[in-house]
Length: 116
Image (cartoon, rainbow, N blue to C red):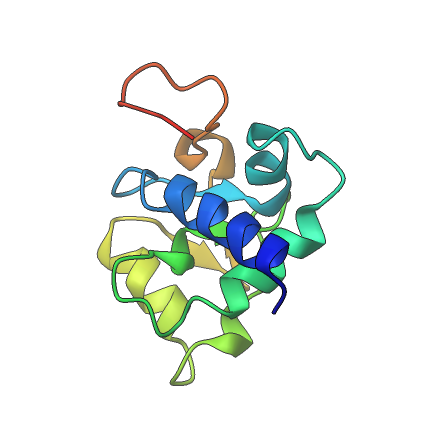
């Protein structure tokens, strides 16, 4: 990993750590919040590399339609789904039910101490 990628990944993790319990966001929303709207795939790479970090709730990051596209990168068969369900989020066919009500937009959220 290059130094610039390492810095980018850290900025992604800073945002992910702020996703409220029972909420999710998307790779693209994180990229947009970082001012790099076209780097959603790179956010995904950061999430894949975060599994050794206990304080990064990677299970709260899904694709723009609420699909659990990163679930294969979690240990166990359905760990990502189980973690989300433990937070009160219902999943059906690998997709978040009522996605809009659980979505957290990092760039416009005023209810937390959001900082980049």
